[in-house]
Image (tube, rainbow, N blue to C red; front, side, top):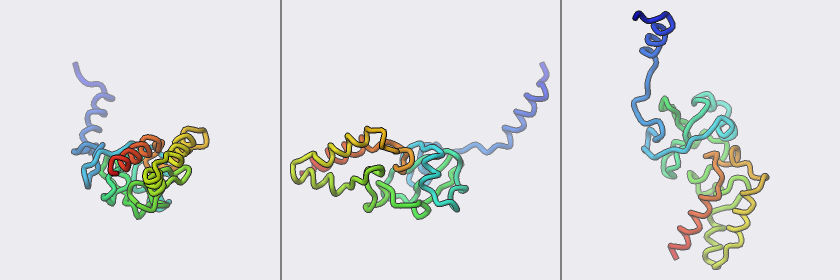
Length: 158
């Protein structure tokens, strides 16, 4: 059975589309598994002159030592120097909770003081409608799991 015009066009069009040769979920520089982010996050975190360098959706590289902030399926990258502000975990000066400003140092103080006051308050507040994680967090995700992970990491290091 002969191909229809639309089938022929589709087959020919696919021949000219560049398929990514790597796993698009991994950073093309450090190979860390990225976290998917949406347009709203990219719009909030990228300087206007850098926004056009990457697709509508992308991945956030979670590796602290990697200079790549975002990458897309065509291996286009935006580095951390193109962000509007320091981002956790890329910068020690960035809050672990972008919405309410909780810093890693405050979690470390809770552990040192054998308290959970600041950590617990931040987790509770992060679960409220006031949290705007999609624009305040560089990975577009709520910080609750990361706060808890960091707390237990610090507690285990005592």
